[in-house]
Image (cartoon, rainbow, N blue to C red):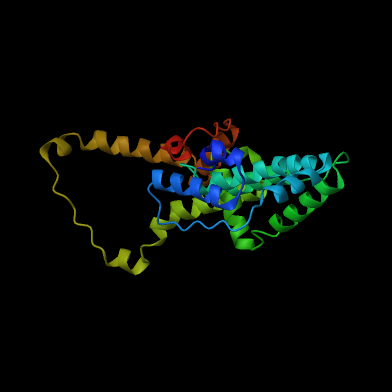
Length: 245
């Protein structure tokens, strides 16, 4: 709309308020929004020309530096607000990249250093709650895209303990009293079972012996976590939920 008004010949011929208002009114009519009230009472063109003349090369450089700094912050906002596969595991990796981006360097100007200090001073105060941070750390390791972003063994130990609790949860959920009250009825033995009774008994002995030498639940969890840690992270373009399935 603005481009259409500015390229109109009448605007070049006269910058008076009534002429500009008339041209804008035509544009509003064309776009079907004439109910908007347009009022131009003063001619601002000379004022804007004077303001533009006051802009220095330093002002332009600062504007470019500011846009460069803000571009990554803007993209990080899109990552967690409009991304189709956003997860909690993104938060810590995003903060890590922003910390690197906003770290003050020797070659930074005073303006850039000040902006970096202000923004990181605010971001660094986020997610200070211990429980929330613990949750985000575990979510990061469980995201196959970012599991390599944290190298602390303490978080892996928490995941191992959580997996062990979940594996044992079903057994622990059944009260001992209920188990004692449960009477198992002896099933009727078929003719085939009776005929191969000795063979089945020997098979059960072999299975029991194998179970004794089989890895424990804790060992299985350790092995699976070790395999998972050894896998390369997947690209951020892939869906982590689909990877787990």
